[in-house]
Amino acid sequence: MQLLVSPGSIDEARRSVAADIIDVKKPSEGSLGANFPWVIREVKSFAQKPVSAAIGDFTYKPGGASLAAYGAACAGADYIKIGLAFDGVTRVSDMIAVVVKAVKDEFPEKKVVIAAYSDYKRMGTISPYEMAPIAAGLGADVAMVDTGIKDGTSTFEFMNEADLSSFTARNADLGLKTAVAGSLRFEDITALKRINPDIIGVRGMVCGGDRNATIKEELIMTALAMIR
Image (cartoon, rainbow, N blue to C red):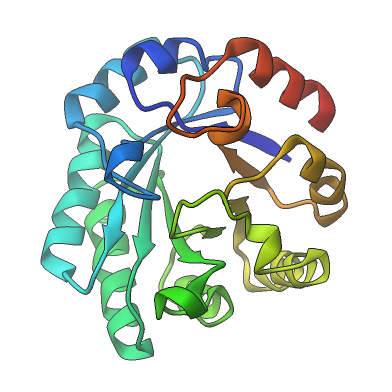
């Protein structure tokens, strides 16, 4: 299980280098808010770890999503991550297909992460369970679950341990890796180790509980020690 930490600035990224994956995002622009390409490029220049880049919580805009995905890949991201903030199997299929094509046609070694939301019912978006087989069939690499509405409510309040274990196992059968995020707390790590997703994504946990605060290196080290 790898620890993905989501800094919102170059300074925070420098304090996140102990993490297994450094995930560049802009928290002020949403759950998977996109940061600037020059920030991705700068983080890639000093990180000795894989760099992930969120490209946004997208409504159905395949052109914009594919261009954003390509831009993040060109800027140096190893993982390109999109959130699907809409519903409809056909539209979701269209969106995933163009994002995968935008990245993989030129950068086949890069990983595409498709995120759906644990709080999909209150958001009116596609469920992680529906999203994952579509993502697998269209060549994505990672199925992610996150919270879309950042009000401090954890993914564990929408999907329990059994749900997340089933999601993780099903993804493995589909040939996908699994990432779990969404206001995770230190006290969730014991359950997460039993669930054993490939990646856990955190920000608030390593900011002292408030995702709008600043990442603290010592909290990253605490999380890593608990995971290991």
